[in-house]
Structures are given as C-alpha cells and as structure tokens.
Image 1: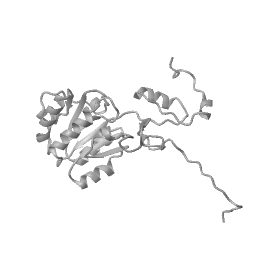
Image 2: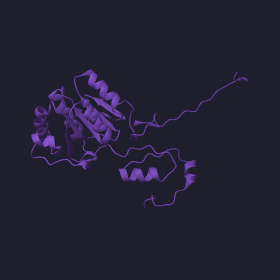
Image 3: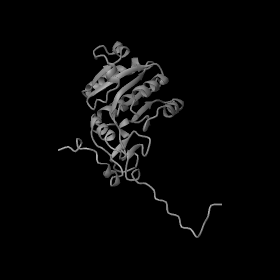
Image 4: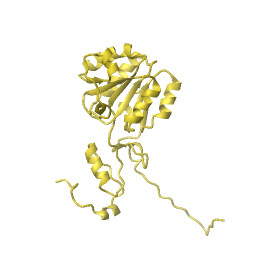
Length: 235
C-alpha cells in the first residue's frame, strides 16, 4: 500500500537528507509538495530540437530521428521539432518519410500542414506535452530567435538542441536556452550521466540547486570542511 496518504511526519527530516522520486509527474509533484525534505526532481522532459536554416539535411534528419526514435518513453526523448522556415520545404518531406518509417505520428502547426497535408494539426496542448510515446509535434519557426522564444515558453528546462553549421548561432542558442542540457549538433538522447562521463545516475534534475542535470554519486556528495588551528584568530 502506498504511503503517500499517510500524515506527514516531520521527524523523518532528521534522518533523510534528500528524496529523489522516480516516476511520473504526478508522483514527483505529490512528493515535492508533501514534504519539507529536499527533493531533487524534474516534472517534464519537453525536449526540443531546432533545425536551423543552414542545417545539413542528412545530419538534421539523422539527429531528429535518433532524438525521438531511439527510445520514445524516456525523459530526454524529443517531443517538439522546430524547423526553420527557410529549410522547411527541403527538410519536411525527408523528415516525414523518415518518421513514417519509424511509425511516429506527426502533429504540425498550420504552416507545417501546408507541406504535410496528411498530418493532424497540433493544438496548444501538444506544445505543452511530454508524450513519452511515438508522437511528435512539429512547428515551423521564423529564425533562431523564434525557436528560442518557443523553447522559453513551452520548454521544461531539461534538454534542448540545435542543428546548425554556424558557430554564432550555436553560441546564441547555448547562451539563451536555459536548460539543464543544451545539445549542439547532437541527439537529445545523449544528455545522460553515462554519456557525460558521470557513470550511472539516479535521475536528471531540472532544478538549479542543489544539482542540475544528470545526478550521480558526485552530485549527491556534500562537503564537510575541517580546519586545524593553533590559536588562530581573525585579525
């Protein structure tokens, strides 16, 4: 039987330093709101990949497919694909065919539907959704700033990426997208402890304190300062 409905026992905070709930958003939210013990958490993994106007088509398709299809039910899987309007005509048919081959349902904005008339329209709810399923929302954006603005509004601060050949655009994206992981020409699926050299992890935090991103043994370690003196005084 679940212990979630039992009255809160403040005494437990004397024995438990931190909680790292593993499960869905509802479970994590319930635990975080029902305790005074610190909780390392992430509620959603609404991950984005922006295909810039200068994105290499072959690389763009490969990264989009891997980000979404390698494992659809995990928190760093792609949920919204942002395609620059200047490369949409070229990339959308390629993306559509590749995702269809992987049995991914696409939902698109009205502009996307002009190129892919057979997909359903994406609703406001879709932009807020962590599907964890073979569904992907697609939006055409007018430039990198529009992509960044969309991520700022709808993103969850987990993992967001850009595909570009421009160092300037990569730097702008890195600086302005405030997520635990920002991927430059890399799959969103690579935002994990093992890939970062941290070893096995117990979670990925979208908080900014105490830890952010993959949480491994080092991230769970706190410091104890010990000073030896011989009558030392502050002067």
